[in-house]
Image 1: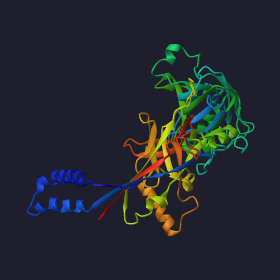
Image 2: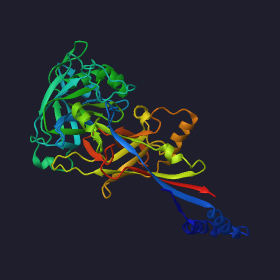
Image 3: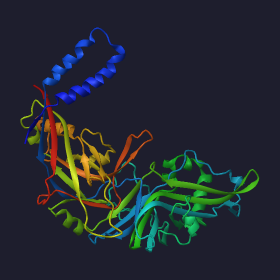
Image 4: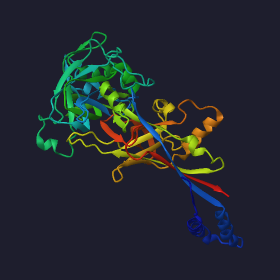
Length: 480
């Protein structure tokens, strides 16, 4: 139903107050007519509002781009659906530009006059996890045979093992762990300086691709440096000449999933520092500058069953279910050819879960709205929300909803494509996707990734929606 609103008084008050603040320091003989002319213009401004129903449905996410700053590792059972979710991840390691070890004659760790490492390890540091921290889990760490390509968009179903990325005769070491490492003193675990981690030792004899044998993997890494320091000139050289990376596969166990924040490869040795014995450590971290991907295995039957529920729509990660919306663009535009769309607002209401559990999945915190046709290219091209055709909304716990405050520019863009004859069959469809975002120190949006953590929620909607319909509220304006 269309309503006409008179904004004369409100607009006059706001505009005149703002103009007075600007003009007071610089009044001249020509300003006395400004108030009158603005008042006359506002008398000719007509504002109308309307609301339209929006149809929604769940769609299976399928395999999504899996490049993130967090690696996921473990296997859990969704307490609400009973479905199993397994996550493995691959990490490469970064080196500082022109990295150097101490001069070789200062290294004290030697066997038969040759440099060796005293020890070598990988630590998988996590700042968050899901499940039971005392659940017994087992992983296997595999040495990569070759690096994964920076230019390839690896997806959440990519398996380095079946795709031939694992070195057949390389490192293959198994680690049994609990996320709460009981071998670490409780006082240490409770200290603010401690970051929980999974420790994987690499101290077994190691043979490289040329057949040379070393007492451990760290010795191999050190000798590759002294063989040619250019191997450590930058991360590209290090990854392609020395260490292509590791794949961490969840082998057995059930009940926890770690959100790996930093993967770190450490090499320990002794050396002389200013004629004093010193313990050295060379650390190479998996960071945003190098590639990291997660492989997700979902229960496809359960995902399909949930997506078919028409009494609501779902948002489920990782790589689970998205919500598709069909925007009533024709209805919004019809009869308003000469109007300006000032705002177009959509609110998505959550349906609270009735399931009670200490391990219920988190609610998605940030949602992305993009045209359905751009669902893959947006992430493949590393785009960020531009608030013209792509928008972000955050979860509001007070209203238990997500609000896309103004998608008016998207409505106009979709209508223009249809008028120009360039629209596809999905021209008025958008998709709602849970995402994680990063901002720089100036609070500028820098990255938007698929949310690969464990989240789930239901939204009001669907073709058999028993609740109030999903609506878009539109405000138009025009001069009489």
